[in-house]
Image 1: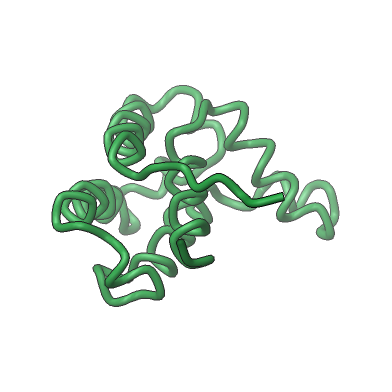
Image 2: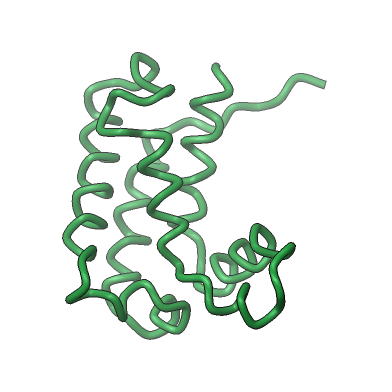
Length: 124
């Protein structure tokens, strides 16, 4: 399977993860920033990664997914889109990962997609 598939699956896996794991990932990718700035970085990075890799079926993983897999990822991506915009800014704050019920919906949708995306075993 291609590296694009592996990266796409990893992005969805992070969306399916617990709030603690999602926060740890954000802390890791923003570790080069000043501590306060890193902690203030919004959680939208999770959705941006999915967008970058999926691009509504036109991204690097296109052609590698079945219709069912594509539909499940589109459902997740579309839900995240409904949470965008200034009126939903609070959803993208880090604290929301723990308390906003919409993040639980994101995790459910991501887990459904993961169930249909087989994990690729790396050859030694």
